[in-house]
Length: 472
Image (cartoon, rainbow, N blue to C red; front, side):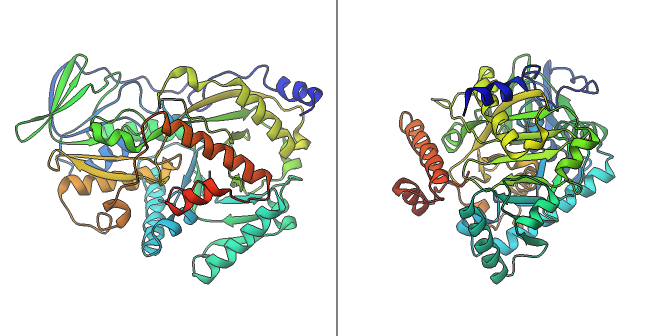
């Protein structure tokens, strides 16, 4: 990258605030009071992100008389649920390719359940009046290198042969640039129904309001410090009190699970994003984007990008940073070297937008597991359930995960609990320094594959054979 280009692109960041755009909102609700004293309930939900909020809401829908308490360590939606790109996908498996590789015999059922789950989210947005800028726009996976275009066409033909292309369309270079105009776009795969765009923080805040209206008792600034058996139920200790519950749903995702044996199944990976100022009518016209789809490119180290309701462009992804030891720390949320890299990539994709400035730049931790999609389980003789490992695709899939946790806590056999995806767990990550070394080698190998026509080296091929293949 030439120094002059670097200076030009980084100038666009001169006024960017290092806070998540979605959370920088004057309408942000006040937090509920912290728990002081002792509480009792039928169901305790630990975690106030999407996973916990959906669990509490659906628990009350299933049984309005059930007493439900939700604990959040800080404020509802402050972590991954308020920092993501706002892509609400039907896929439960981190994309069809990952699902087809891992559960080929179940992929039809998984796709059906995912589509029903997204429909149910849209229905909940309407029923509860969730003001979250929900738009069922679909998503385009774009190729920016010749080998990616060939791979997209071959993948579309494979899906067509399997009868899995309903609502999916292959776009050549002309067709994809008619949708969104970038000189880097060579082809695209357009999923017209399987993804919605939304305002992620407003979804979390809306779910919180819906929970409160249904009678869920929500306590914020109340971290759960310990989990122990108590008679026929469970007890959770908090800084100023405690909760005794018949059943507990753990929805802490990237944060250390209260069931210690679960912790080795996830590691935190930090993801970063930029948000532009609102585009003028002329700037937006220069890009096209009339149908407002979400977009992502096809590289191993990929970008995701979309329009906000006021026509800003969110541009994120590419760097995925794993901190040694798997620690989640606030200082990792800000990474100027990644912001500079992302700004350069943005103007390479959209040179017609040179001069646009970024108003916000931020990061946050994603919980990933070795199969890149959620896993589930129970502890304490079925009195505790957990879900984790969504790997950045949890805006939609967490609602499905909430259904699974409630099924497991009820001891019910359902079409969800019978899935191999639900019954089996991924491989755990090794201890340090092996985890850091393996992840670093994988990242290097993915970057090398992107630079060499997509060719995967021996390390990546070995990971593929072990079911640990990375595609992002």
